[in-house]
Length: 265
Image 1: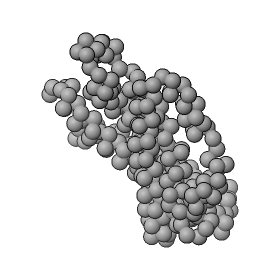
Image 2 (image 1 turned 30 degrees about the vertical axis):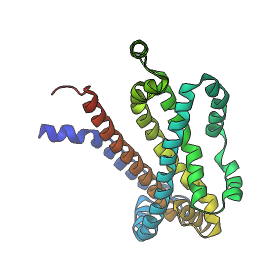
Image 3 (image 1 turned 90 degrees about the horizontal axis):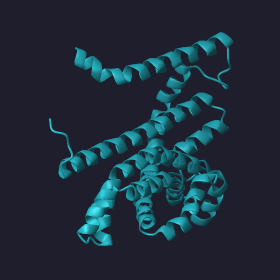
Image 4 (image 1 turned 180 degrees about the vertical axis):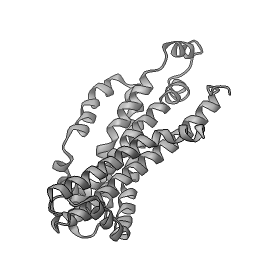
């Protein structure tokens, strides 16, 4: 019984807070008699979620594909850039400001340009997701590649290790955990990027992601349906984050077992 309570304890507090928020929300709507078009009750949102479940599931699948593709591209491209930065101080100094630019530029300002260059298609959605989600990967992997223990580097130098051996056998293995950390951050950002891009791409009428659904429901003043789509967006972000956590835990567990750092039981 005690072990079951310990396993469930991490979920009790968030669930309790969620229920409290739902009850408070319902009470505020009823007490102040707020119009549904401004703030529908939780029951209205749940009903809209059920009524539009097939539409939202279809749209979630479309958005998930774009977000997942953007995250994978960010992982590969960001890691390659980080490796370049770790090998050349001059390249890091010259290019890092442009990496920061990708993080600070308002995506809503450049999305119309990306549509002109790339079109109203899936590629544009992935491109926006990459632009938003690549910075944490570059930043964390670069930090992992550069933060190698000095004693280990001296040991490799004593063994006359080449630059390639130093990279593949020391720096990259040391940066694996930092890559996973960066992907955890980027997983949510890739979903945000995909949905923001869909706000623009969906205007063509040829793309049916969650962002497109939200734009349509906002234009129709269907607030309950809009909030139901927002809940689907939140669930999608949690799902992608959980997938990254699962993959990361599996990779790190196998890595520690392979390298012999796993603690003895």
